[in-house]
Every structure is written in structure tokens, then in C-alpha cells.
Length: 118
Image 1 (tube, rainbow, N blue to C red):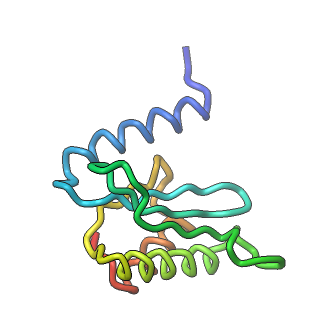
Image 2: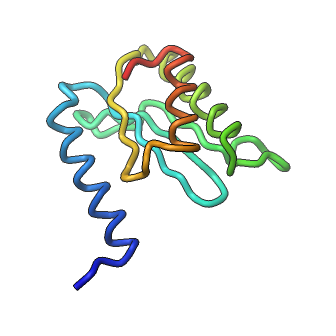
């Protein structure tokens, strides 16, 4: 029986996280969630089970559009600034099953330019 698109996405995300755990070597994880209207990012320390920093396109207030590459780049820069304030420089990138393209790529590149290493 074929998988539904939702099941396929969930399976891809599980496979990605399983691989990340083996490669992380204690580094926190930059996790991304992308919806049709917004994008958000969290830096999660899996060893302690806490969120170190978070940023979302919902923080922009009224009129701020969160569904384009510019918004994703702003979130990438913001999450990197907040992580650097907390002393986190090296992370492992968890794209959460999303293809590395478009908004996900824009967020990742902006975070790298702002000082995060992954």
C-alpha cells in the first residue's frame, strides 16, 4: 500500500533525525518548521532536552509576511544572533524532512552568514 504524502513526510523526518543523532557529536540541533504561511526555527539541546533559542516569522507583528524567502532569511539571521548570545556556534542542521530548497535554503544560508557553523 502506498504512503500518503503526510506519512511520507513523517517517515523522511524520522529518517533524517535518526541520522542526525549519529552525526551530532553533542552539538545542538537547528530544527526548522515550515508551514504555508510561516517559518520557524529552534536550536535544541537534545542532551538536556531544552530549547536554547527560537525565532519565528510570527514575531514580526501585523503585516509581516512569513511565507517568502526574505522572511526565512530574516529568521535565519535572528536565530543565529540569539544562538551566539547564548554561546552556541556549532549546530547540526535538522531540516525536518523538508527539501533543502527555497525558504529552507534561504534560512540556512542566512544563519551561516550570521555566524552559525553547520
